[in-house]
Length: 200
Image (cartoon, rainbow, N blue to C red):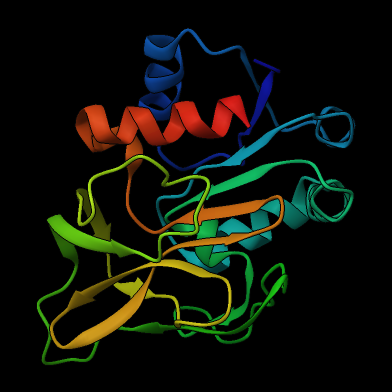
């Protein structure tokens, strides 16, 4: 396995992600150094928190451009929860803040009538073509914790339905992978997903 560079922007679920990689015997480094990101052979962007705060932190640390350059250059990337939402143009959570804009569309909030956050185990429906979700049960259950959701579009690799809304639970496009759920909190199935990414 190549070394996975985990981006430390000052927030997020770093400890649980690190624990997962330790359990898998994966090689990794934690960094907020743009030069280390620019040399990465595999990238993980964990995410718990606020869309605007994350993107502002990436900008303040000088991480946006090397991150986008590495992704554009074909380096495998995994965004987890808010780390996946950051790939889109904008989010209703911080309308004034530009995302990484690698995918079109706006991350929306569940409606006021919904119970938010969407917290706990829920079923996802993979499209059957995903490399990241290969060899999983047909309709696996994974762990979610979020109030905002990504639209379904061409790169959607799995969907989930909550409070009558179907949204992107996982996306995949060439070297870019994203999951709205938390594989590091999804038991053996989540471990299998992270292992698959590390072995790509």
